[in-house]
Length: 288
Figure 1 (tube, rainbow, N blue to C red):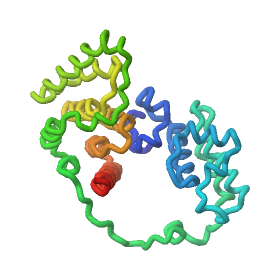
Figure 2 (cartoon, rainbow, N blue to C red):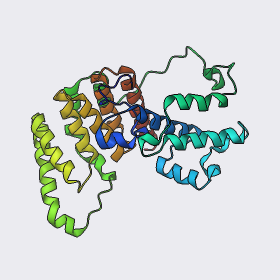
Figure 3 (cartoon, rainbow, N blue to C red):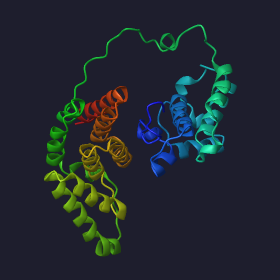
């Protein structure tokens, strides 16, 4: 929040992004509260549960389904119920219905039972340990070096092979009436992108996106780079986050977020995104 520029730059994994940011591209103090609520839910459940689904479980008093079984016996039942209730308040769709930071601190204070031991001791983390070096793909390496020329060459060569996992079921009527126009705008954008006419590429890709008939993480990634090369890092970050929203475990989306964050001077956040992308690529390789 401190690094945001007039509320226009917001660094977060898209899984933790408040709904108002996706609508308006702006962040407020209430947006940070929402993100905190998603993190709190992840800690309680041991996995990422979409906020809407989590709220349905909470409303149905299905806290047992929500809680991580490994936490059983680790804290008082009333404390767990209080944390779940607090998370649900943070995740309200309307920003004005969420608690403010002061209220959060007041609610969490009484739940902190081990004040005499720092968190790294509770978690069994040794201080001073150095992290192993990241193993990055050529694209990840280019983003880490801010070599946007190399990023462009790789995205051109990669094409649309990763769009195959995107859900684009269309009716026959949509195919016959709109599909050709949509594909033509994307094709024009691809030509401009390849020829490094990035302003024209942004315009063509925007036409494709605005129609809404198809969703393409690759289009968002390419437009993100076009924005970066046009000195519009905030717009580049939004597109990279949208690419992740469409394809949640796509390393390229994280790498493009890293490139945009670096342009915004948010180096620590950029490194986090590089780590996320590298971890996803390693997982892909291990799965063949």
